[in-house]
Length: 266
Image (cartoon, rainbow, N blue to C red; front, side, top):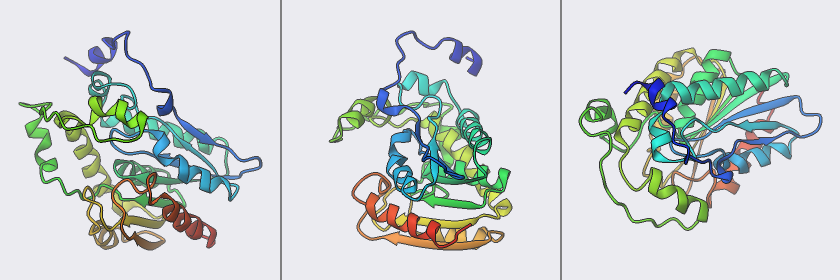
């Protein structure tokens, strides 16, 4: 079935969880803004603490919701890497129509999308939070081939989420291995790796030393390959995992970001 037909066959029962709506924070008088790019199967809410922290500095932010995210599995499978990237690019263009300076932040897969956007628009600043240039899952490189025979691998993982909203999303996105969509993530990873050579932004990388999704070695990977960046700074947060932008590591992550942005980063 073609992508167009899959989209046209969107079920009438498909609904967007209210908590998954796009996030926006626009302080009065703001002249600068950040595009916030959330991760694979994530939602804009996951970067709202970062946006709120930026707002205390008079900086606006906007986190769009990628197509297929925050709804259900069938809707997710009707989308692709192009849809997610195009959504972020549209968000960047909207911000640039309102603000003098527009920068980019991305978490996990959003770090890949943020890198592509920064390279495409020559964003002054790029902040990467556990960016998925490297992942611990060794199956990701073979996901495009595996998806041809097994687009979904049933795992029936136990739902151990404590947040009520994430409990609702678990069955749609995290209970099984969504191989076909992981293949779309792999495509973005390859595109972002190629675009590293085109990034000229001042760049901050933040990782968690207990992250079992994106290894901390991603920092050295980026430092060796992003040779055209205006500057490169990195921080590792002790004792936190992959979800640090919105779990117990969020306060320290936001403090690092605010400090870096406040150091005349532009």
